Image (cartoon, rainbow, N blue to C red; front, side):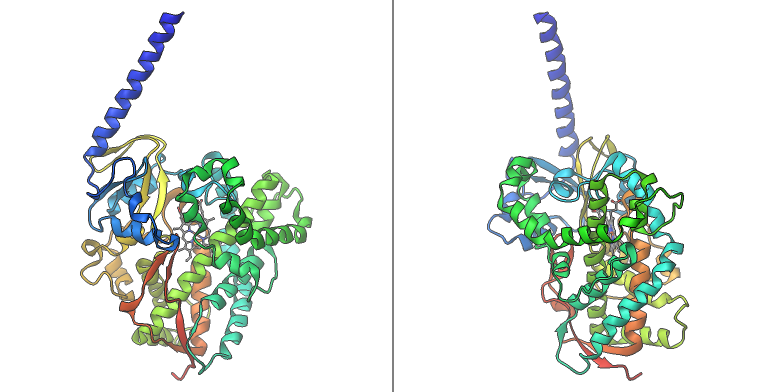
Length: 471
Ligand code: HEM
């Protein structure tokens, strides 16, 4: 008995050792930054730095042009691909659908789409995607219009006033439309605690990533981080309670598979647990509001800096009806998301070995996907890749660019579920805004200082000055 156990143990150890050697031989072929301290990797670069700078530091350490590289982050390795071909492999591989738990999971809404994995994510995605079809979104347009008009009324008070940071108002408008459209929750979000909770999550996700021991439930519960999470996200939890209270009547068995988000969640036939319902409401508020509001604020700021492009938008609005397509506005929004993708770096975990170019990436390895760099790669976008030029999205030009070179909403099975929602809302917002106003700013494009928290933002905020439209 003892001998056979020893025999089995030695076979197990040999296999593990073989796998370990194979893993190191494989990854030794992948280049990485030189000054990586053994066992710590690049962690020393973060010591003494503010949480708000972590994302930026990470992006600065990665080589912007290398097709593939590796970075040791403590005992964890990150493989960082940087070509559209490799992005395509990752986004279309059945073995790169999961997200690493130590980055996405841990302390909130683990059953929500953003951080769940496997059968939970797959089931939720299938049911909830019905709420984001073009037909469903058309039903939300009157809510979008109502909330955007409220925002415009507020902006009229700012005409010929001082320069101000437009983000908070845009975020309130976005949030009001989101909670009313998806949850039938008509709430005044301006200057609200809910808005603060969504718009300033204080880099709490980054703090969690930088303290890997927080994934142990008992350590997390007694930590300052846990108190901060409750304090910062408290208003979102209260909103979830109120949304459920107001929609109690939707808890019925219905054969209608195409309801708005809250109907899908509460339809008893879909068999969501109470925790899953709460987590999905939380995640939609969290993932849908700040992302859209930041992209829109960035768009306004860039248009305030580029008067010629602003004028072209106004020209398009002047020649079209509200229900028409607005191809130039769409190009502008895409160019904003190319230069400032809201998720500049996202992560996946391999569930089986995959090949990236000639590198074998082993199972259970984290892949960091630097969307920000790919979107600014000169080899793809040309020497002017850092400039704001919406015309590069004209059909005859963009057709020549690899389809995975532009992925602001990520791709594949984990692609943003709200991308059509976001594009519809943003287009209606820009059309209505420039029907009324012209804008300018004292901030120069070259002076913009980007912050990654882990979503992208600008250190100086989004300062604009509003004037009544004259053309
Ligand atoms: C301009 C606006 C937006 C951008 C640029 C954006 C971008 C993204 C990106 C890059 C991801 C992948 C994140 C990752 O893998 O780490 C994502 C996921 C997600 N987004 Fe968005 N998003 C936007 C708006 C929205 C809106 C309006 C909603 C909801 C109404 C939404 C809901 C979600 C959800 C639920 C996920 C997780 C999907 C899954 O993993 O299955 N997003 N988004």
